[in-house]
Each structure stands twice: as structure tokens, then as C-alpha cells.
Length: 451
Image (cartoon, rainbow, N blue to C red; front, top):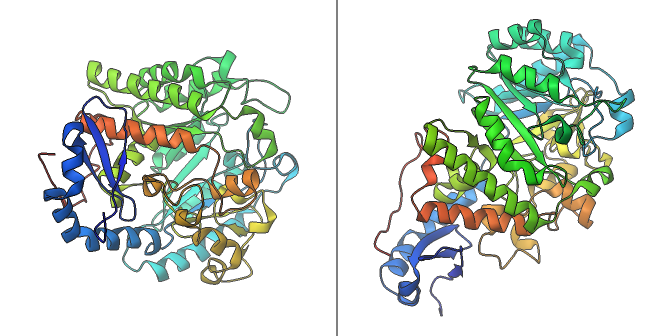
């Protein structure tokens, strides 16, 4: 197109529409196939884009480089009572690691409070998610931290749900703690293949019982990790989650950071087929019952396309959120760009008890991640959807493909997910997948109809 804008066309698998994308700015338009040649050769699309391109570029640049950390994934213990096959933490750490003592945990939270107060003055409460390993193995310290800093942070906990007894639930719900639990399938026979105790016992029944007790609580969610073992059952999993009135779920691809996870890695195109079938099922259930199950990772992809700054998760852009939107804290106080890196000593950025967080987050281990740009990845630099995907995940890329600056493990899967998102937009179905109020804080800056 000479010196004009560079557009790429994307076949989204729709009968009537193609997508036209300007990759550098994440601009896109859906154009009827019979009008495609005219649309990209001049006229309203090109003229309007040229006028707005600088603003689009500024928005993407701010999203990629103008955000400061506002959340921390806090591991109060190294240990876990489960030995899930795909865990990103080394088995020896999970079996023999340490608990963070109560006084030490309170000290860490105070250091975090001071850091966030300095970097986000008047910017709302930062988020602390007690993560794992299994945080409830160190319940005394976790509860002490929540009580002591109730006004300073928004607290969450990610748990395998096996320790969610009545006393624990009463405390967490009473303090409005967000609760994320993990479950991979709608039956014990499937779920227990990958998630089980050190003695080989499955935990499906205990997790399902916790789900019954959480019904009606607005601040809970379920993470399902997609593997070769469960991918064919994803539509049934959506049925199960919807029947249990789960408000939000994530259907996340297994991360292959640890070698033990790689035998469970599904083929991209096969995993995509079942994932998209699960999205179809979620749409059908919402249409039939009026009750929505938000698949958060797909909802985030939709938001990233429609309104880039409305996205809530930061795995699907480069640099990703690791080290710049959030970071991870291990039980000994070591800081890593993200929980996915905790098992990788080379990405230890410092220790919260030994250095200032501002200095730690500028260290070379963090910079390896925060300077990762999808344009620098050979397989991605000419891809039309590079700013809707971001080539996740740098930890997985480092371990699976040799460097954080290389492509991750599921390129074809993300392509198919984004094509599905464009089809949903073309058919006017996008709101059925998005969380309610997703656009409350957004402003429409560009609209072009009639293509």
C-alpha cells in the first residue's frame, strides 16, 4: 500500500466477513468479503484509520510500557499436599519446602504496603493473592496477614480446595476474600488423573463438596487446566461448572515450564477444537438459562480486541504482566517476575527482606521479561494478531524453546481462539461471553460502520 498504512487480512472462518488488521496498533475492522478489496485500497476505512492511528499507537504503547505493578502472587509456603502432574513448582520444593513464619509474613506485607503506597498514591487498594503451592497449609500466617492488613489490600487466595473446611470458609467469606479453586474435569475418573495427593489419591470429591458450599458467594472462581487427559471433556466441564453456579472459570492451557508437565501437553489444533466447543456450550447455556458462566481467559481475549485497555489479564500481550503489572513472592522472600518462574533460579530477582522492591523489579531477571517484545520473535513479527496474543508464556518459552524471547508452546491454539473471538463479534454474540459491566470504565474512541 505504498507509504500508507499496512493492513493484513485475516480469514476468521466466517461465511460473510474477513478481518482487516493493522498489527502495529492492534486496529481491526470486520469487512464483508465482497467489499474487501475496495475497503483496503482506499476510502473510509483507510482515511479514518490514518486520522486515528497516532492515538491507537499511543494507547498500545501505554498498555505495554506505562503500567506499574499493582498485585502480588504471594506464596506463604513452598509446600503442597498434592502432587499434580503438571505443577510448575519443583516436586522437592513442594514436598520439603518451608512455611513463612507469621512475623515474617506480616513484615513482607508491610513492605508491600509501603511499596504500593509510594508507587500508587491514591490509586486504590493493590491486590495480594495467596498462591501456591497450597497456601492453606500455612493457614495461621495467612489469616494473621488478612486480619492485620484488611484495609490495605484486596485479598485473594488460590487453593486446591482440599482444606476449605467450615472454619476456613467462614473466615475467608467473612473477610470478602476472593477464592479461586482448581478442578480439571466433571468426574473423579478424569480429574484425578492429574490432580492427586502424594499417595496417589484423587481429590475430586473434596473439591466438589467445597463448590457446593461456595454457591452464592460472588467472589469465587474455578481454574481448569487443559491437558491431554481432560480436553475432550471440556464441554461437559462447562455443564458441570454452570450447574454449580460458578460465576467465573478459566480454561487454561497447561504450562510446560517443568519437564513433568510436557507429557500432558495436548496438540494445539486438538485442544483448540475442544476449547471452542466449550465456548459454544457456555453460549448455549447462557442463551437457554439467562445465567452466564464467564470463561475469563476467553473474555479477556475478546476485551483485548474490542477495547485493549479493558483487559483484566495480562498474559496475552507483550511484554506480559510479569514484573510490570504483578510479581511473585516465594516463601523465603525471593521475588520472581511471575509465579511461573519460581522454579527457575535464574529468574530470582532479589529478596524482599534484603532489598527495596523498586530495585528488585528493575533487576536483570525482571528485565528479561519486561522487555520481551513480540515483534522481536521471528515467528511472530509478521503476525496480524500479535498484540491480541502476545506469544505467551515467557517462562514456558524459556524452558520449552530455549529463551524467554522465543515463541511459547501453543501458537495455533491462540490463533484459533482469536478467530473465534472475531466470529463472535461478527455475529453480535460478544456480550454473552464478557463479564457484566466490562465496559463501565471504557470510552468509545473509534467506530466505523457499513463495511
